[in-house]
Image (cartoon, one colour):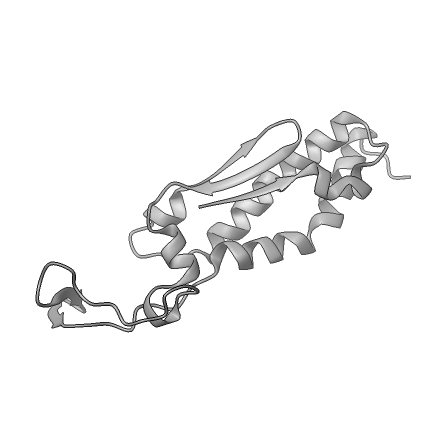
Length: 147
């Protein structure tokens, strides 16, 4: 699962700005977006939260998660999923197994899990901070002097 931000989508913001302002903004955005998504990511073992990694190029920022279940946590499964919307049944066994509060539980079907929308919610929090990130980029470019 990945989130990609291209500068073309921010063209009004970056029009006629020095390249250093743009690169500083992308660097700050990389840290902020990754941080916001990690804050929204549920924790069981911490592997999902720890797998969010930013990648920067000259004109885009990509934050991705390499865990194969990240999309299922984001969108949900079973009747809560955006596609399919049906109960979950085991494919090869008669029952599914889970350990809940140290107790082994067996069940023949499940409604699934609702989506946690960690990437979506983290991105929305990041969007609120874009003006401040851009202002910080401009201040750093001007050597700390505000206009």
